[in-house]
Length: 242
Image (cartoon, helix red, strand yellow):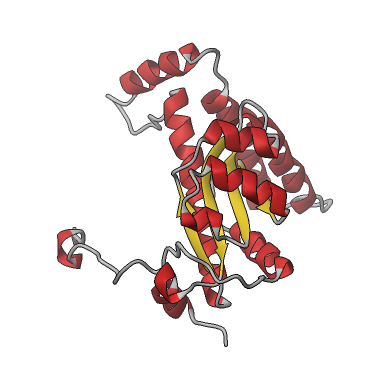
C-alpha cells in the first residue's frame, strides 16, 4: 500500500541492515526519475545518478564505503553525483527548451519579454557566475559583488567554493526526493557520507570534475536495521516565526 507524503516522511529511517531480499530495479529506477523532478538552482540540474545493481560493483563499493552495514548489506546502491562542469551543457539545454516553448510565430509582448529575460539569464548571467579560472576569477567576482552589494541587493555566492555548495544543495534535494519515493513504496534507504570518494569515483568511472554527493544504500529493512528510536531536538529550538 502506498503512503501519503507525511506517511513516507515518518516511515523513512536510515536503514543500516537490509534483508537478503531482492528489490525491483525498475521501481528503484522510477524513484530516481522522481529525484530528477526536485527543484534545482537555476534549473541547471547539475547532477547525475548512478544506479548500481551489479554484485561485483556493489562489493567494491561496499569496501570503498568502509564495509559499513548500510553498504555491505544493501541490495542496490544509488550514487548521487554533482557535475558543476556540466553547466554549459545544461544552460544550452535550457536555451533550446526556451526556443521550443516560444516557437509560435506571433508572441505577445509579455511572452517576448519573458523569453528575452530567460535567454539573457542563461546566456549572460549563468556564464558570469560559473566561469572561473583556477578559482581566481571567482574571488575577483566575489569582491566586485561585495562592493556592489553596499549599494543594492546582489547575488554574493561567486567563488568556486560557493558554487560547489549551490550544486551540492540541489543534489541533496534530489536525493531526498529519491528516498521519500522509496519510502512511499515500502523500500528503505540510508544516505552515506562515509566513503572514500576517490575510490568511489574510480569504481564507477567518473571524470575528475565530478563529485560524490552521497551514496545511498537501498533494500528492505530488518528490525535490527533501525538502530534506535528517532531523535530530533525540540521543534521549538529550531522554529522561528519572524
